[in-house]
Structure formats: structure tokens, C-alpha cells
Image (tube, rainbow, N blue to C red; front, side, top):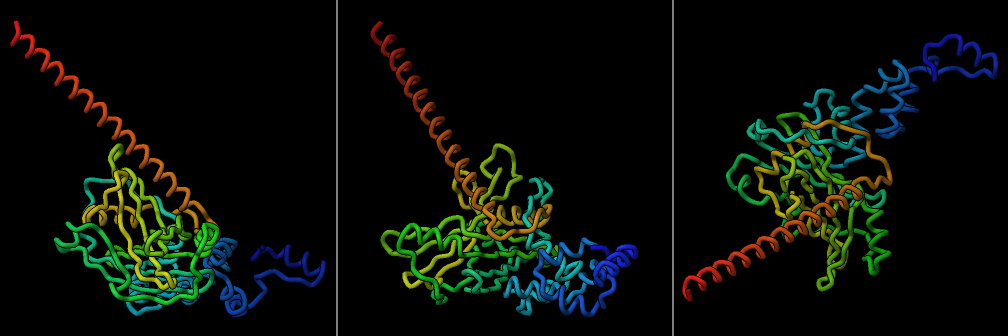
Length: 337
């Protein structure tokens, strides 16, 4: 798609009366072409030539895309935060619609520069929005930093009705897993960065055998921690719990290390900072299972670590028993000699 190649224009005109994009009025391009594109398509077309790049930079285009992609961004609080980003909605989309590689763990991480986190959550069943919420969390209190990290987006007695059908079989659970999509965007108002810590698609859907509740899990693995430690890789786990009538009763996020321990607020804030400051990768794609693959790999590493720990404990127990027997034998020899 040439924009400034006059030779190409002449050739196409002679061949069949067609014209290049450079001959189309910019208002027509914006109104009838660019406004119909989603974020990935708009980002792709912006890289084709300088004219389309300039037209694709308009804030209104990216603002509309953000609102269409994440209804929660249309709230006054999030709209204001997005306006403070370096390139406003374009920067927010780039941060939140891309995969990320967390920055390496550092002793110089300063959690004091993040006094607050804002969470924007959007849950979809197919193309239908099910839940949209915005939650503000202060991060400076001792209660937040010392308590197990957990951010809930629903009040304890709140329930959100949905049109989803209850999954009564394993096949129905798998279909529900493929149909559900969640965005869990964490925004740092001071750093003017955002990161999406959800896997997009659910990684698992399980029914509780007694209560009948359906628990849907979305998860992202945050690597880059101290090598060999339990926090070398951390699971950012989002749980969505639905009642027997498929009303959403709970949606929360927690951090879990490879020993299965839930991290506290201070540790989790440092990990979220590394995610916010890390490099962004490719844009999310429909039907992407990378999140589930990473989750299954994390669970496998977690199981291997647990088995290794159990083997080490058994060896230590055997060593203690052997030392006890040797001590008993030595004392018996001295006593009876």
C-alpha cells in the first residue's frame, strides 16, 4: 500500500482507474476506515506509511478503542488517569493489550514510589460484557504491606447476575473456559504505566463437588525473581467464583510463589512494580493459549519443587534416625563395657 509513490498511482490509473491511499481525503480515511478498526489492526496499519501513521495518532481513535475493549476505562477515574499517560490512550492501549516480561528482581526496588494502585476489571462471556469494575487500593499502610495480598472487586454480599448456563459436565466446563475472557489491568497513577495481569482466556474451570459453585481461574506467571528461590516465578492468580445460578459472587487477585505460599502486600507490590516496568511484547491474539501453557508449566515446576522438598526431608529424617541409632549404640557400648 504505497502512499507517496507517484509511479504506482499512474500505473494503477492506467490499469483500471484505481488510486492509492494518498489520493483519498484524510477525513474519509479517518471516518470510514480507521474508526472501524480494532486496536491491533489500527496499530498495524499505522506502520505502513507516514500518512497513515499521522492519521492513526489521533487521540479520539484510541480513546474509542479503549472504551470498546475495556468498558471500565469509561469511568471518570480511569479516563483521567489515561489522560496523564505520555501518549494518553495510545500509551494505555500499548501497555495493557500487550504481553509483558517483568524486569529482573533488584535490591533497589522502591515501593514507596507507588502509594496507590488502580485496578480496572472487565469480564466477558463471548462478546457480551458480564462485569466491569474499578477499584482503588492504597499501598502505604502497614495493614496492606503485612497482610496477604488480595484485591477484591465485589463487595462481600454483592452478586452480579449473568446469562451464562451452568456447566453440568466436563465438556461444558471446557466450553465455558474457552468462552470467558477477562482483563485485569493494574494502573500505577504515579508512574503512569499500566499492565494487564490476566491470561485473557481462563486457564481452568472447576465445579465444587459440594456447594456446586463454579470457580474460574485466570493466571499470569511473573518471572525474574531471585534464582533458586520460591519467588523466582510467581503466579498472579485471578479467581472468579459463580454461584449455582451463575451469578458472579467473587472476583479477586492474589500472588502465589512456587511453594504455594500467598505473598503479602509488600512482596506483591514489588512484583507488580517489576511487571509495570518490564518490556512489552506482542499484542494479545484471539484464541491465544500462551497464558494456560505458562500456568501449566508453573504448576509442573511447583510440583517438582514440592517433590524435591519431600525427598530432602526424607533424607534428613533418615540421617537423624541413623545418628540416633549410632548415638544409642555408642552409649550402650560405654555403659556395658
